[in-house]
Each structure stands twice: as C-alpha cells, then as structure tokens.
Amino acid sequence: MTKGRLTREELGWLLTQEAQGAADRLRSGLQVIRTQAPPAPTTGADDASGEMDRSLDALDDVMRMLSNLNQRAVGGAPRRGRIDLAALVYEVAPSARVSIEPGSGTEVHGDENDFRRMIQVLIGHAGGAGSSVTIRREGDEVKLGVLMGPDSSPSADTERAWLARMATRYGGRHELDGSIDLLVLPADGVSERTEREALKRELDEARKQGEAYARELAAMLDRDDAVGQSSLPPPPGPAESMRFDAMARLAAGVAGELQGALGPLSKDLGALRAGEVTDQDLETVRRRVAHALEFVGQLASLGELRADELVEPVDVGAAAKDAASGLHAAAGRAGVDVAVDVPSAPCRVLAAPRAVAALCRQLLAAAVAATPRGGKVSIAVQADVAAVRVVLDDGGPPVPASARRAFLRLEASAGTYGRPGGPVLFACAELASSQGAVLELGDAPQGGLRVTVVFANA
Image (cartoon, rainbow, N blue to C red; front, top):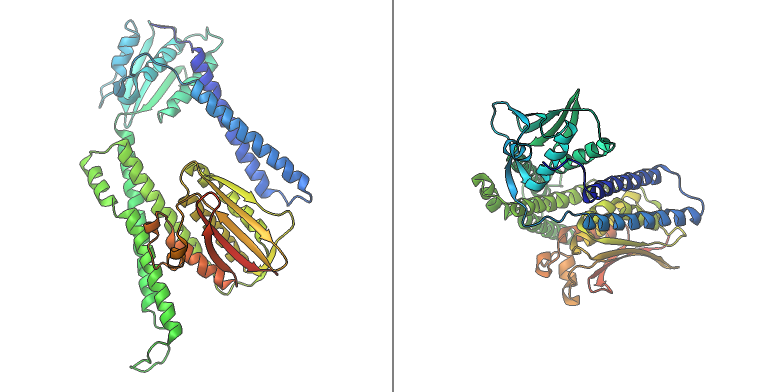
C-alpha cells in the first residue's frame, strides 16, 4: 500500500482552498464593516476601499489560477460513479483487519482515485496496512473509522485538514471521536434524492406564489371602486379604460414570463418521477425555478411600495451605489461585471426614497438578467442644472428603435427580442412616472440596451 502522506499537488490544493476561504471571510468582513460604518467625510476612505477591492479581486484571480494549476493529473480516465468503500479498503490495504457491520450497503458516489487517497491517508493515521478498520452504514451515511495510532508524522494535522476538505467536497465530514479517526460520507443515491425533494419543494412554492399573484391580479381587475352605485353603472371613462388596459397588459406580461419559466417544468417533473434524471436535467430545472422565484421576488418588492410615501430630497447617486452593492453577489453568480460611475457630490432630487431605491435596484437587476455570462453592466448617475439622469447599459440583445415603445408598454412580448423581465421594465416605467421622472430606451455603446431615467433637478 502506498504510504498515506500527502503529495505536493494535494498540499498545494489544500493550501489553495484554505487561502480561498480566508479571502472569502475577509471580503465578507469588509462588507459588514461597510454596512455598519458611518459615511466617510472625505474621498480618501473611498480610495482606500477601492484599493482593497482591487486587491481582493487580484487575490481571487490568483486563487483561481492556483486551483487550475493544482488539479491533479490522473493517468487514464478516472472511474467515477458508484464505489464500494469496503471493497476499496480491501484493495488498498489487503492486510488490514476490516470489520463490516450488517446494513444497507457501503456504496458511495464519486471519483475512485479521490476515495482511494482518502483511505490511504486515513489508514496511515492508524499505523499502516495492518491496522483495524471499521466500516458501517448508518441511515444515509457510510462511516469509515480507524483506531488512531501514535502521531509519527509531523504533518498529521495537515493530513487531517486535507481529509476534512476532501470530505466536505463530497458532502461529508471528518471527525475525531475519542480515539477513532472517522470519515463520514453520504451513501450512494442520497444526494440525488435530496436534490429531487428540494426541487419539488421549490416547484411547489413557485407554483403557489404564481397562483397567489394570479388571484391578486384577478381581484384588482374585478374590484369595484364605486360605492353606492345603481344597478346599471355608467360606462367607464377614458381614465378607467386606460387603467384597465395597463392592468391587462401587465397581467399578460406576468403570465408570459411565468409560463416561459414554469411551462417546460412539466416535462422535467415527469423525468424526475421516472427517476431518469441527469446532472444537466437537475441544473436546467434549478435554473428555471431560480428565474421564476427571482421574477416573483422582483414583483413582490415593487408591490411593497406605497403611493402615499412622503417625498424628500433623495441622493440618486447613493441609491445607485446601494443597488450595485446589494446585487454584487447575484451578479457574481451570473458571471456579469457591474461598473458604477457616480459623482462625488450628492445628486439630489425631490422624490419618495423607497421608490428611487426600488427603481435603481430593479433596473439594475433587469440589466444583469439580460446580460450573458462574461458580459458587463454599467450604472451611471449624471447631473446638470436641469436634470439628474440614471443611465444603465447592459450587454443583452438590443431592441430596435421602432419597437421600443411597444416593448416598454408590453404590447410586444419581451421574448420576441430575446430579453427577460418585460413586466419589470413596464412597472419601472410606471414607477418613474409616479415620481415625475421619464424612463427612456436607447442603444448601449457595446450593443445592448440603454435605459435612462430622467429626474427634474431638486
């Protein structure tokens, strides 16, 4: 049996993971400090904060390079799939004293080479090939334990840290139970069953939220605002007709967006019930459910606004920076870079604070959703004597000038132009109008869509 000492590649991988974890904790701590600290009186703190962000970004790039360099090269194609840990223990250490308890099986799912190295390192902690090994199945977990021998290696703590990292990578854990060195891994089939159950719960939740919004829209359309009217109400005037037309277009836009996200899921659910599901199928279902939940969340945040909110001077630049900060994590997951260009001096307008914050946040979220992975989104605030402008450029498909009015008013489906979030843009245009602003569409310099909101200067 090969001695269970870590190779240089494995040590490099472990150090890379530890450094990446430290960098993530540092970035999270910096974000907490920013949210809790009072506003900086000078621009020097902003420069220092920007320098720290650039340093952390450079550190992330280095970590990614190290991860790529430290990927272990294996001769031939590795066997990945169902692996019997008990059989692998007999193969790795044929002279070991193995104790197997009756149960449902000791199979796990993953890369055979990874499990082989984990067993070698674990048995090395017990004193070598003639050690006593216990393997058993408990519920949804397979537990492999050895009786620890004397720590003859100065790198024993490092090897245990590597075991813990590798176990976490496969959804398990590494424990020290008294004198027992224990490796716990999820049994084969458990992760797929857990994912299927989680997806079913998410689908049920998305369906319930969609039904709730449909009921609310129907109630808004059926609500009778008149009190004490006669049995024959007068015909609706122009204002009522316009309001009904706007609500009908919004209802159609919401229905189209939810149908596009949830419609194909019936076929995916059939595959889940039949048990014929691949990782790609799970990722497709997860992506569709996430899109539907994100869209419902956007509508919910807009629905929390109140028309009677008091107006006051609002710094639009601060609202734009807060929106970019709040969407930093979501943009990172989508692989979209967000650039912010805000003047150092406040750009104040007379409006409702929550409405301005929601407008910047929803427009930026729509721009990120429309931009493909690797693209760029920019949000800028421009001020002059007459007006304050919020300008958002995305990297998504453009909208022809002749179709922009129909696109913004939901008279044409957003899917026609390959763009998501048509109802959100419609709601943002109405929200901007309620604050005395104007929302305009144009061409972004990089070929995407430019959305401009023009506020009258306070």
